[in-house]
Length: 305
Image (cartoon, rainbow, N blue to C red; front, side, top):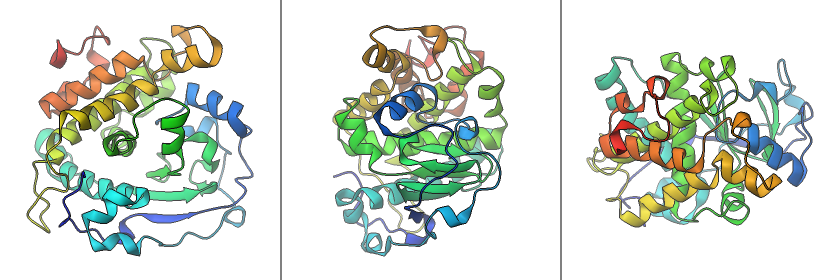
């Protein structure tokens, strides 16, 4: 069990929708499309290069609605239901970053919008299908999740099925929202691939921000209840998060997809790098431990040497 049963969330914090055709996708769907997208996009950044451009046609997706009312019974719902787990993780992220971002950087945290969708949805970056995986769209400041991805993360990519593996995914996407606020997200587009690229540094920083959240999430009380959203994290919980970070390393995905590793095509970093930067954030709880852009050695963050 991860969430305190006394935790409470307003179901309206996360919207639900989707189910449409996603007609402006630049890439086709299916397993091949998923592998290709994972190589260049999975877990973040600006998906506008892969999604349909321009203002999305709302007629191609189902109207958004709120279908998470059952989650309001408390943290027990988040421990049992994956959609509720996303909702409560977002609540925990809001609680942590509303305090820590202001204290550590002087920037006031602006809550991102969050949508759980099924099959396809319209976004400010274009229309998207589930094949893209979780992503953050800076144009509408929204993180998007089709929670069926968590099954793919476990069955296709070999990650743990533990709750913190899933929560890490949510925290990573909100990490991109922090980068958008702090003016760093565009660095990924300016330098889009390679082992030392801006894209890799951007993704590793989002992993580190996910670790910063985990450091505080089981300690910082929610003002509404007086207790943290998360129960104390165990070594098993952290291993679950690290297994997710490892599963989506560029080297591991390339090896599985093509039988070889080509660092010059990396966009997210290696499995070991993704784990190391998550740990840098988790061990310190500090935003300044996540300065991947200044790091001379991405394999060895100062906080984990």
